[in-house]
Length: 361
Ligand SMILES: [Zn+2]
Image (cartoon, rainbow, N blue to C red):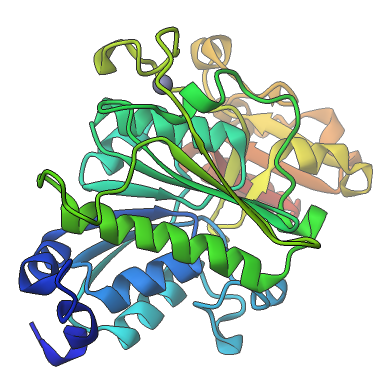
């Protein structure tokens, strides 16, 4: 470990070489490398957190650059996790970055979170925040929660195994949706404030972990609310553990993880699309075809899809609607059968077909 690199923080009595070595040994997962995840992961990398997981299913878009300061102009069009990994390692080559080009969902949450000591929530959907909270409780790690909305932001450490969890704060899925930055607008530096506070909480948690009365110990459930419109206000509110909490009143093993939004990973272009949104846009004129077997269809299928198993394609029998449709999305379980169906359609002169794997986000 290059000690000069960290000398401005190891000189602090509260950190010292012991704290630095704890940072080096720690593993932090950042879910969402956007407005919040950018400053958080940069500060964690700079501070010498030894292993940082970064998870994001998106690619860098030009509109991201105004606040997602981990990305450079040349990264536009690149997968966020690829660009972020490079930029984090450019900043600090001594640390390990593990990238997940994916969303967090019910099927992967527990396995991925179990490999980390704490998780930073940099997402902008309530459903995802609930999922992260529940999975973190199951694998017994804390969540560094953050949210931004216009000129307001919130940050807290939740840990259902030792105090309040996010569901103690929001017992049910709020009716309102969190507006994302595209919908509500944001000054980049405000995302920077909240993301930096999340990084600070991470560092405090790691350095003070398993020590009583450490001066950096963060308070579980202490919600910090910041409003930077007009006269700035900074408020704190203690979220208390709720005995009726749907998550932390149960045993971890009793909790069933849930994902809500169905998204689709298109292969091989690896664009992620929200099928519902795709369908809403009539101009796209899309048909979605489930090419799996009857029993799989009966078990579960996308609401908007029609069922047309692969063997029909193989016999050269196609759905009639196909001729009047602009886009065709075919899906199966793993993308193998749908890819085959796409090839068959392509050979039949239908070139506007995509193969996809639906999954829950
Ligand atoms: Zn709770």
